[in-house]
Length: 385
Image (spheres, rainbow, N blue to C red):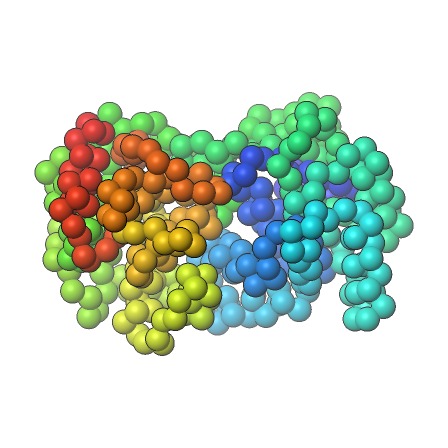
């Protein structure tokens, strides 16, 4: 926030502009999370999705930025956030200044909730809308962040930033600040949307030796990714844990209990996200924790499986897909039923042909690997180098 002139002041309106799937929601969640963890009240008005889905977004982001926290500290942070945040979902109806006023009035009357920041996700204010929000903010001592897919070239807002996805990160480009001099674009981590240092990770690998494949080494797709990596000369890191059966031990990385806890997830949350039930148990939890490490370590995620009608992927592998989508990772799935590679474009699955064009990649998928799936992995490496 300091790079953008500090946090918004009461009466100011900030606008995040980006195409669908570029991470504008994740960025305004980051702004909101910063306020919440300082004990400031936040109202989040969502133009799409349910309250549970918005809450899941906060949970995912907190898991990413809170890796150094011990589990009790993360639980305390979650409770702290819940006490200072209210989510209002408009269920597909574009929010506007009039709706925001009604929600604020109701919250003030019923629960005496008076936020210092209001996030409005899914509405691009025009000049009139901006003036209404600015006046409202000055009168009630609050600021606004709006996240939108731009419909016009007009820049409205005290602070306007644009997000542009790049290879391993997202570029945040300031378009309007209080200062007349705009700073250069910032590089944001695609998982946590926090600033990241410049490095060489965005350069396309010239040889397989410059690539690290993160996986689990289990039978099926993970083992096939490992075999292809070794044959090509790529580095291999296979996360494992006590009780985990690995087919491949090359590059084995046993996860400590503390590392596993860093990737801890609620099985109820996973069930809701994937629309299927997972029985409580230590083993399935550790598998999901391991997948968290695989995806978070990687710039691009490649999965072998089957895409369902609701857009999710079958089996526990589906969790790696959901993590990649939540963290705005580049994501490819080879559908074994259709024998086609699909890329997630932020809104839907589209056909394509991937290459290994990043220094760190995740290769995972089903244990029930078909010959077409195995061939897809071989051709992926052959096509890349």
